[in-house]
Length: 445
Image 1: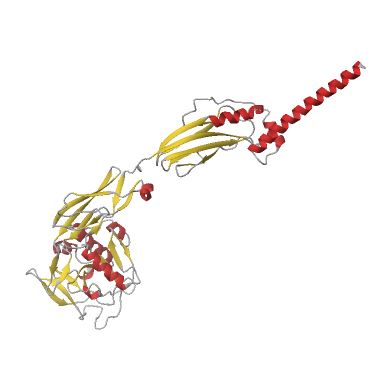
Image 2 (image 1 turned 180 degrees about the vertical axis):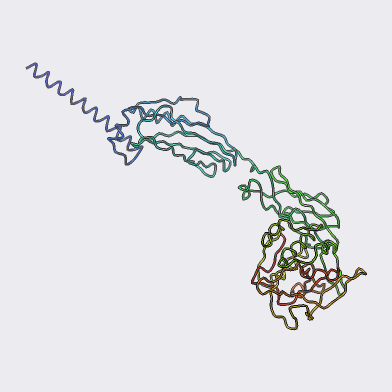
């Protein structure tokens, strides 16, 4: 009887041990399922039979306590607790970068997957999948690095990131112009920042600070508007984040010249005559050179402004397209701001005007030896129906009605005929010739 009792007692012990093993396996399987839903419990349990390695982060301040430990699979809860408490720290400035490098303390069991990084608040900092952290705005966030093995087991390390406020690290500012010529009594000009280095920070630039070296010549408001003062020269400095750029400003007296009253931008006739009449096919380039000569107060060679065609941006000019009324209003306002405008004329029929040397329907002015101007018959009109013709508009009739402007209110420097027998000429535009359908105006930026 005793041997029989011993047999049944041994069977009971074996059954209890087997139940305990099954219960332990079930607990680990449930924990693995919670950590990696969808993984097969058998494969996860098999991976847990070897040590699970804790994840560490390089490039950040390591946590003081507790030290990271490599724990057996049966102590997964302790490993999770360790990792939850082991918080790394990183401080980075806004706009600056820092790299976190994930590595394991000891070899990972099974197939190692890539580490995945995630930021808790991308308004504070972002992180890419190489571990590069970029400060976006002041505040705090948590970067979590998570690694998983081929069986679905995963472990994470966390880094508390503090982002301090800082200015964009720009090294240079670009202004819309480096020189400006204003007319005393005119509407002035606007000076804006159009770029910076590195260019990536342009969209986050704040409003710069403007200062004038001589407010008697030119003041400047908080938006960069430059109203003209007395004739003279001044330097306007634009500063931001310890970086500055400058614009040389020249204010000239308003000139009303010509019998009958035509208001012209101030310019040197000698400088324009030195440039001379255009060479074939380059009226646009010559018109741009006239405009830059007037704006800069020195002869423009046109270097870098032609490459099989005119390069408007190299000369600081850009396109303005609109209907005729808006084009005329823009012409008038640009001239009052002290800026010449380059106008595209079309080849079209104008009653009473021929398109060649026998034009007789309107007039131009020619400078005479007595310092005045003589009126001669010679209207301007384009002679090419494909390319049109470019002229540089520099004045308007003193009796022009700003509320009812006409093309014939404006006077231009014509590259095809800037001089006749050594005298500067100033043709009046003909009504109906501005090519509104094909890039009608080029205006200074």
